[in-house]
Length: 254
Ligand code: NAI
Image (cartoon, rainbow, N blue to C red; front, side, top):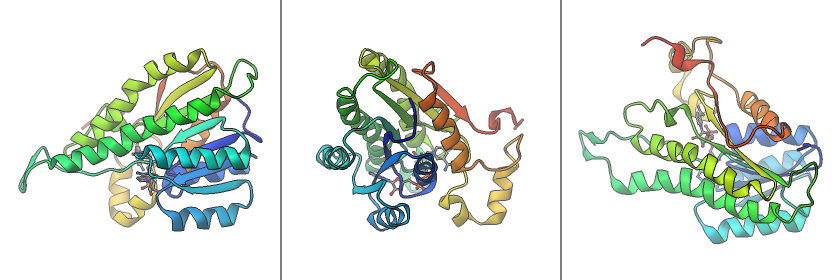
């Protein structure tokens, strides 16, 4: 799928990796719809980018909210060709910690936003993509975001890893379901990516975390995630796949 002039829905687009992708694909000539809860950051970004960008205050877990965002995108840009799901939260607690068992409402919230939210957006985006004209055998591309925690979750990551493992698990069946519509579905599994979260941790922590990455020995960047997303959008032969992008973090002996 070509990028220029195509319409991208990017969830979590007001911050971090999502924001990096909004800026990247906007630079390449795409029209971008930012779906995020954070109206202040989302609207400020649209003010920078101009009329090829729109912001919709969307809660990915809420059916009506996503439907409104999709409708606003189609009304403004006429279609949806690409859906990039970056909205997510990372909330850590031990299964049994000093304050007791992992609070169930906290576990549920992570699953709702990361897993159910991604599915909610992709299913409603796919419904619109199905109405697109078939161009070179394609009507749309969907990319979800897992994490290396889907495969190698750390202590405290039971909910986060379960949510990301769910994203990896649904990638193939959703790709199968949407194949006959000409819609491809892939998942990106990032390692440690430099986002505002890491800035808040301070330089010492960033250096310590960087040393866990073998080569290159640093955190990844949102641009590097966008570079992979670009490949997945453009290459018609990648489908139903989960791609790790982590600087080889699992090669580090522990
Ligand atoms: P971030 O916190 O900088 O951005 C996440 C965005 O999602 C925020 O703008 C937030 O407002 C939005 N959001 C949260 N809940 C929402 C909801 N219910 N509806 C709509 N928007 C919502 O996070 P970051 O670091 O950019 O992460 C983006 C994605 O990448 C997440 O799915 C995360 O799990 C994943 N990831 C991040 C890694 C990292 O090292 N930063 C590593 C592996 C995966």
